[in-house]
Length: 268
Image (tube, rainbow, N blue to C red):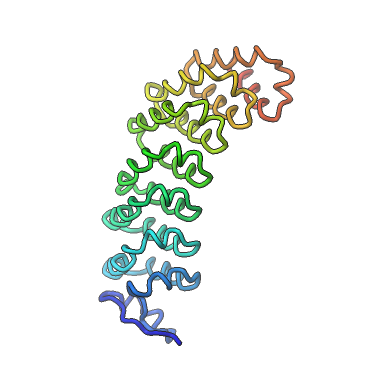
């Protein structure tokens, strides 16, 4: 039997569509979790959010805010949280991100939560709240199937001047170790792509010590390709020299190394 709940003040306009359809005004903190987890109801909430006035939006934020972490793990409800982050005010985004920051790493490693965290990182007004907890677990997240996407987004959105702590963590763990990992190699690549030379130079220094071992590796070769294109002249010389130490004909036919060989030819 359907149960009718009283909605919070300010949501009468927000729920007008339901009233027209003969449905009760049911959205409050007692029912939001259930409503958001239903795909049809969640879609209605998102549509209402899109056309709501500022008072109705704030009323909805007040209801959803204590639930955002739980909603972020759900296959349907997480879409509502991303919608709020995408078009909410700066203050609303900070409120939501503050709630998310308490479990940033757990969310980053969840198939749905990682989408929410990435959306939060795109809002510069709120992303600062996530930087410290994510950097503190950079290696863990970088080697995770979902978490690596969050770390890539973090590297992309931070100003280059703020990436020194990430470079330091990568070097402490081991550039080679991370470059050999299926997911971790992507973080090394993003750092090479996004950092200024003075910040990324410790990674390039470490790559000089292990470049030979990465040439034909299924993941490491991608890191070397970025180092070849974005590195210093001495990095290009070292990588090309290591390639020439190998059987170049075999490398050109190798499914992992052939792209690297082609890029070496272009820079020689």
